[in-house]
Image (cartoon, rainbow, N blue to C red):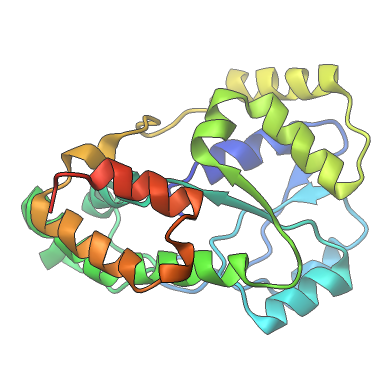
Length: 231
């Protein structure tokens, strides 16, 4: 998920000896971050980490299987994401999540939050439902768990990938990432969604209700708890 700490997490992996960060896409901005076949072929013999804001699809699942990739899905409280995304759009309107313009950037906080929920949150729900229901069994890691114990989260990824990582080297990789500033968060706090405007909170709760099968899902429960009393 965008705004789930993926830049921070992938940077830490790129500092592990023998690993590096690669780009599997040919462009960003408003372009959907679908992996490019030529880049997958170029890096097929490498140990690498690639950060993608990528929804699940049948083609993506075929790529995962064909290239022996280990999918890791980072998630975060959707209410916190909405507020974080509000701040991001003020600086950068171009995103594949929705078509935001300079006019949206000039809205007040309450108005922009409501726009984010109506325009961008459907992308997030598509993302989450797709990966939850796919057949490649991705490893889900929550933002709070990852930031609380990044080394432990990294070890979980390596274990899933069948890679015998050295805990001491993981710790060293995190230190190297910190030394070059790659572990910096824009805000990096949980609970920001508690300050969401009531109209935006009500709209997000209504979106969640369209997925009753996820009513007891931890992400949905956490998001609803954050929004309690806002609608």
